[in-house]
Image 1 (cartoon, helix red, strand yellow):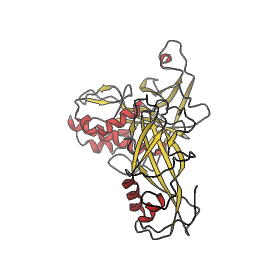
Image 2: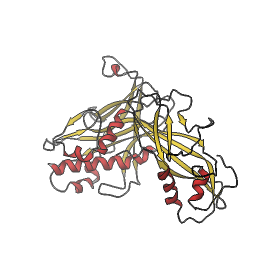
Image 3: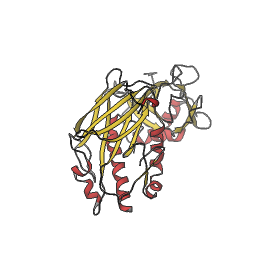
Image 4: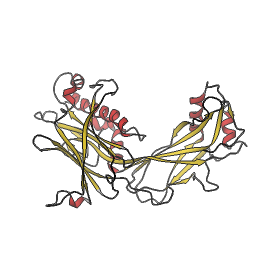
Amino acid sequence: MQSVRIAFFVAVNYIIKYSARYLVVCLFVSLTVLLCGCKADFSPNAEWKDVPVVYCILDQDDSVSYVRVQRCYLGEGDLMRYGAVYDSVNYPADALDVMILRWSDETQIGSYGAVPQDTLRFAYHIITDKVSGDFSYPNQPVYSRIRQQGDWVEGCVYQLVVKYKQTGEVLARSQTRLVGDCEAATWLSRPHPSMVGRQFSFTKDRNFQLEWYPFVLGRRYQLIVNFLYRYEYDHPEVLHRIPTSCSSVSSNMTESVLTTSLSHGAYLSNIESVLRGDTATKRFVDTVEVMMSVCNEPLHAYLNAISASAQAMQEQNQMYSNIEGGAGVFGARRSHLLLRCPTDRSSNGPYGMRYLIDQLKLNFVFTENRRD
């Protein structure tokens, strides 16, 4: 029984890890054990039936949305061998209808006579470049929908429904809301894209504190700061980036401002590790990019489950999920948030950005201000 539970969690983590590539992630990353605020009973000794594992993360800024539906396989013997068989973990191409219904609010769902505002249908297709591993590859079936005007409306409730085509029986369902907008004109407060005195620079404590305003239903935030540079002679028009991640921040959704910090050592050592040994002349750009991903409560709970996956696997016959009828996660995020901000142009030590970069001895030149 324990080996069955472990194999199930391995399968779920694999699905999440490799289907996330097609959700234009960031980031957030890497989105990878199962979730949300409820526990679903699960017995490996139960009579065989389809137990779907469903993964869908909505981002209204994505050009394409994806739903991944895979079978949970149970049985005796070599469970990893089962997973390598395409038909063991995937539903047939014509077996399922996958759709997302848009409702005005939760009270409408299931109410007699209630009709959704819209039905967003997802088409089956095969991704052919899934990486090799213990599970069936290279083909990976997914359900996708190219974004159409009016699909994603903030403030509405979205209900994911997976049905058998032949019988109309509902196999799995779930619901979530989109992450909304920031109420401020500019979501980033420090560094600021244009405000004097709020440029990107380190202080005496060797940290830089980033500040931003919350997004509606934003539960967890992840910020990345991109160091920007160009090569002096080799395609100088190309802008290169070196990303450094800040610690993620969980919100109780009551704060007016949220903060995280980026350490002087982490930022500079990351730049040095990428460029050490690169002897080409490089030009410092007096600008950084700040990227942010933010997710709602279901995805936040899912990410928490990942961090405690070892403990979760030890729970007797239980797993975390917000998928009714199966397992998985249906949540939302914003992963296309990016602003460019000026850096401190000072060449004076010990905290001026030009001074700090020059001390790394990575063959940078600073003869011209280059803000992009």
